[in-house]
Image (cartoon, rainbow, N blue to C red; front, top):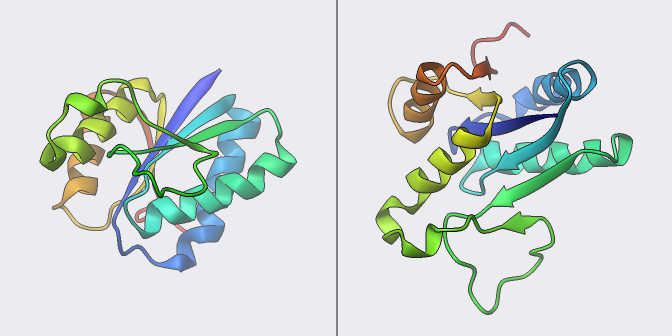
Length: 144
């Protein structure tokens, strides 16, 4: 059983959604990916989460978790599919997103990303995934 995680720009275009779905179906059907970890910081994370929700109806054996970078507040709603990685409570808030991303990357075999520029957190974690020899699907460079 394999694991996949996601990294992408906060402002990715919604036009990549069909390609994202296609890649995830490929991973589920042909690469035995059954566990997915996604963040909650921007448009790419929201898109990945919504596609995973849809796919869980067709592939009920997959599991996914929205991995939070910050401990949820008392008024937090809809926490059914979210998780807090052990140890995040000791991380200073300004480092929490990077710490969470490293946590997800460490557990992943595959990385699906949308990185169209060479700077920022998404680009940093794309480079980290490549250094770690993860199998990467960059939706910004895959032909449509």
